Image (tube, rainbow, N blue to C red; front, side, top):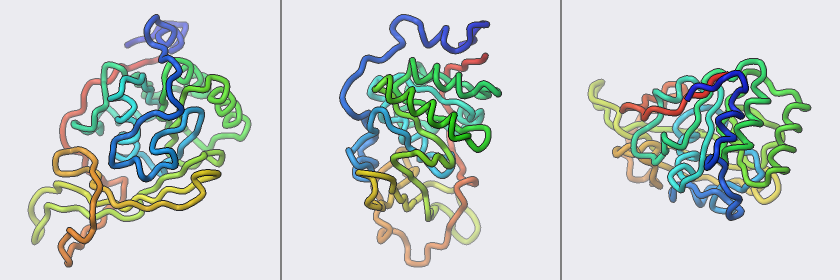
Length: 242
């Protein structure tokens, strides 16, 4: 949805867009619940994922499927990588591919109108900017900021440390599913490190709990997260531009 000179806040201020303050957490897909301290995304918190990939979209999908408005900023390729079957509601997702130099104001506007915002900052975030956005989160009391990359103030940090793909044999075939080891730690209630194996994605394109013992003993495939092949056509997301 294009935005005029008044910027993203013109769309975010539209009637019916602002989500009412609900429970203390936003839901996540069932496979992710045991990884998170409260079994969901704590409102008013910042979560950092080491790099953008399917794990980020899986974290957004649960809240989106539950009816939350979500914003995605600074990730122009997300329209291509969004995996079918995760539950992301394209009709309630605002996409800002390039928020520009005023990205902190754009993100603050998204937080004012959305319950969850996925952000890839354009560069290392100055402490003053981080603190201002964290203060906005606390003031609003209902939103969650999910950041790709480093965010020193994050309450929860997630990263994929190992991933093994199925589907290839003797140099041929098609990558069908990925068994990924996900590690979560953080501050406060997230201080205890948690590790889970997930199908990320499973063969049906979704996310499920995995057991690495189910993989063949000679399973060789490890790929860096940047090389993950996301199959399928992404749903059209609502584009917002300044």
